[in-house]
Length: 231
Image (tube, rainbow, N blue to C red):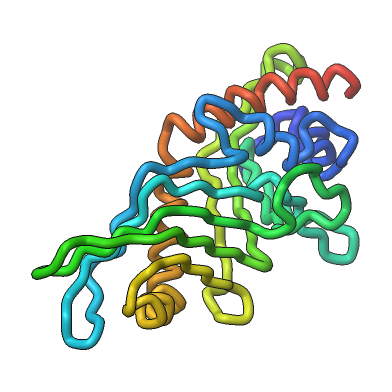
């Protein structure tokens, strides 16, 4: 096994402590340019769907994800679900946070977006779509390094932040506001596990873009240095 930077045991502790600046909920909430709370995505193509024999293309516009910061590291028997390999730290967190819920944040993971439906032979139409996720996991991974354990030389570099959730109807709620005779059919399609998984995959792809992970890494580095002053 690779050698471990001396700051890592402290960061693992801080990641799970609500009073720490390095607490996972605070890291997600504090990341900016772009923000993770709320997180905004411009568009997501859901591909062609068939309604009553007619093919229609579904796409989402102006997608906003709220509740990513309503998160805490999973603990089993009081032990956090965190693994360390050399200087790499991987953690599993859960949404919602029940130990120190953030204020003014949805109690469940919430996706609000505009749905555009484009039939082949008739004009496009649309509506407002809200997807709520009762429970979800957030799997994150980052490298933590320093120079001889010096707090002010700590560096945090995130390489993964992935949302994972059951796409079952008991965990996902679809609310579509649309003035169309096809509304009930479209809601039924959007409730399919394959469509829910495609939405989650699209959000994950954007969250894991270099600029988003880079912004989180920069903020995590600042807060790690502040927290490590007390080590």
